[in-house]
Image 1: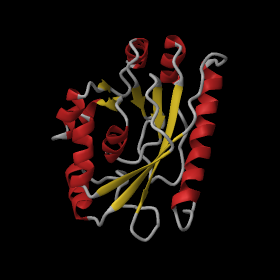
Image 2: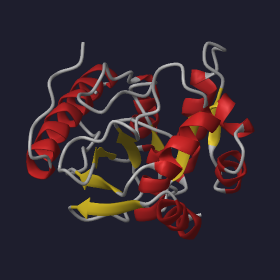
Image 3: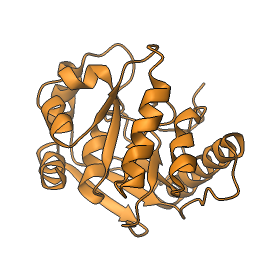
Length: 217
């Protein structure tokens, strides 16, 4: 899966630059969520299992890739979060790292939306740390790329076509220090993850962008 993710980044003309070191310790990974491309970017750098919405399972190419990589699919609004949390905890107890996107939706990448922390309980149950990372897509002018975000009413097929036509984009992936869960409740862990993601994204943007973006509404 890691090999295929790297090849996908090549096909879509995306260069991945990692800031920090990719840890190998088992952890619950979280990241901001901008595009379906995030899976290829994250998967090219780290050997992790993904959590995705059920619709992804039916997507061409990526759906099969996701299933082959052991993705856990969740049906939004189905009340399955408790079952998914238990599955994630089971993976973590076997020292298998799992990633999910706690914003629960994609954004334009300017800032982090509210973090939904219910699934973070899996890390507490398994007594494994939370590994926070953030992503920023940058175009050839050193500005935040606005083609990569999978937002609005555009279909997946149309967005893939736009990605194939865009000039090279650099996906900057930054890892932050892992958060120990030993002294955390679910509420306090959610607050810290939310804070670290917001601070980390601002830090990454200041590092890789020539001009910081205006906050989105």
